[in-house]
Image (tube, rainbow, N blue to C red):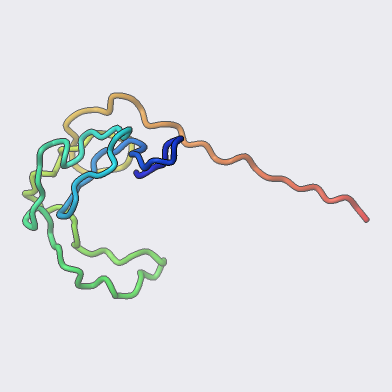
Length: 122
């Protein structure tokens, strides 16, 4: 969620919800970012045991017949992970329960205006 402010400085932008930071730098450029219910906000430090797999095996297999990515266990939560049901409802489909309801509904997404072109007969 890195953005640029009016002076050209790098700053954080946007709302972060239900994210998991696994290894590496947890957060950077967070000034201006609304961050809640993420692993770093909840004080949870994920380990390999929180996931079904951390292997990259299978990443090079062909896509599914419909063009979708193959379903792999990589970085999917393990059944006993401390991260399960720690997020907030953001209006997206999910399985399980969530700890708390979102404080407000997600912002409305508007489609860009339609572009029309008229052609004059020659």
